[in-house]
Image (cartoon, rainbow, N blue to C red; front, side, top):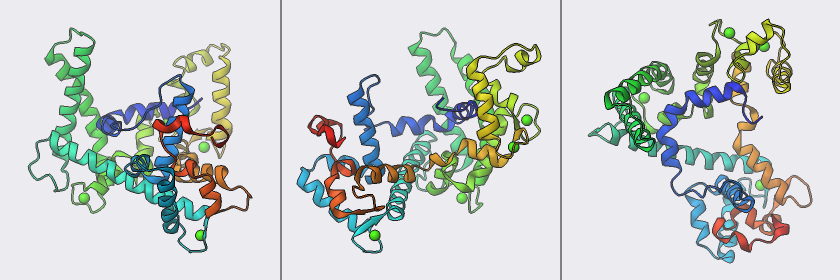
Length: 339
Ligand SMILES: [Ca+2]
Ligand SMILES: [Ca+2]
Ligand SMILES: [Ca+2]
Ligand SMILES: [Ca+2]
């Protein structure tokens, strides 16, 4: 199973906040076509390159010849090699990937910031975002989205019914957002800069926002409001009849039994029967969510030919395509043994 039930709930709950972020982020990326293995692999390789180069830099490398790309890669390696010993350690590579990710994160927040300013007709575009501007912008976005969906599905819902539905989901979203807003507002002036907005829209990427992540999970799953998530609460979303079947002594489907086992052995770490704040946070933001580490390990796996846990310039240049190689357009030219 890719996501736990709680993660699914959270993804749903965060959908509003992400609405326009994902729309904005999708422009210009080369999404893999589902069901096409070559294309899926190309999308994957694009993702590795973006993690190493950054979303804005990666397309620039597509324009270079192989020799130019290797030349630029060599220049880049000098920046990554911070202790200047002519080799790249895992720590150096992870630090680099983190810097790249942080740059991408701020660029994406800046894009969202501008979109919110535009949608709220805010005259002072550079001034930090007020909560009123945010609320107005999200309301307009939700309305536009619901009109778009209604038109696409030939729905008979009237405009006023659609507006009422939007306002209802907006009210729920805004009451949650207020506390997250305050948490993201690090200087406490009530408004969000681009940096603060980055924390607000991607709380799971910022340790400061831990409380918001846990609260969001509890709001979604903690139905008996005891501040913890028990097995039943965890499974209810995936298998709504869970409590009923257990009460009636029915045998549960295998996959539900496996999910129970997963909860007991992997999620409830201190084995007290329910998930505490710490356990909830680990569930929502697992260690594997550290993209920088995951990507750095991937590149080491590709390039560390002699297995000494350091990447020499030669090792990297031998596998230059894994680092900066051309994207989907030139994919056919890749040698298969290099993939
Ligand atoms: Ca080094
Ligand atoms: Ca602020
Ligand atoms: Ca509970
Ligand atoms: Ca526990």
